[in-house]
Every structure is written in structure tokens, then in C-alpha cells.
Image (cartoon, rainbow, N blue to C red; front, side, top):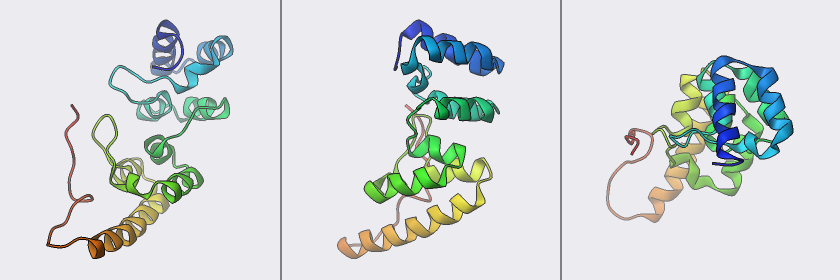
Length: 148
């Protein structure tokens, strides 16, 4: 968990309550809190979106929160998603701490353009990967991994 554990827990609570003043005070006191995760490993940015607090996710991003492929998917940050997948295309098949792929998150939060991008990217990446493999089989888009 980034930042002080107590501060991170206070930030999680502020996000749950929708308390932007407290969250901003915590960020000012401990800038590292923007990259905190909840006990399940979900980033504070994603946690804000999960709790219908997009304005707090934007506040965290404005103050330097690191967006991974999952938080970019939940927040509909198309530019960040493209940047991440350009450098690490295998992340199209990755699962978040709570068991979702980037495609699942983009679809759940209604980010249609990002969903279209992920499907096209997945098809291209899958085709390339299948050409390099021998044998048969499909993977990735049709499976969901249960969180540990």
C-alpha cells in the first residue's frame, strides 16, 4: 500500500463517503496516498470509480495517481490505455486484483469506444500469438479468473 497505512485507510474512507475535502487534505499531507490500494489490492482510483465517485478518481489522477491498465479501463482513459498496451501488449489478457480484465472493466462502466479498441487490439494480439503457437485452443477474452 503506497503512502502511510493509516493515511491510506483514511483516503479509502474519504472516497467511500465522497469527501473530497478530506481526500485533498490527505493528498496534501502525504502525496503518495494517490497510489494507495484497498485491502483487496484495488487502486484508490479504481475504488473511487467502483463507488461512483468519478470526481474523486479525477482528483487523484490530477494529483499524480499512477493509472494502470485496470484503472485506465475503469476511468475511460483511452490515451493511457493505448500507451500501456503499446509498451506491454500482454496486459490485454491480464486480470485485476479483483478478477477482471481490462475489457470487462471498460464494458461494465459503459466505455464503448474503449471496448471497441480492446476487442480490436485483442483480435490482433491473439492472431499474432496464435500464429506463433502450435496446437489448438482459445484463451483470454472468454474466461474470468476468480480473485484469490
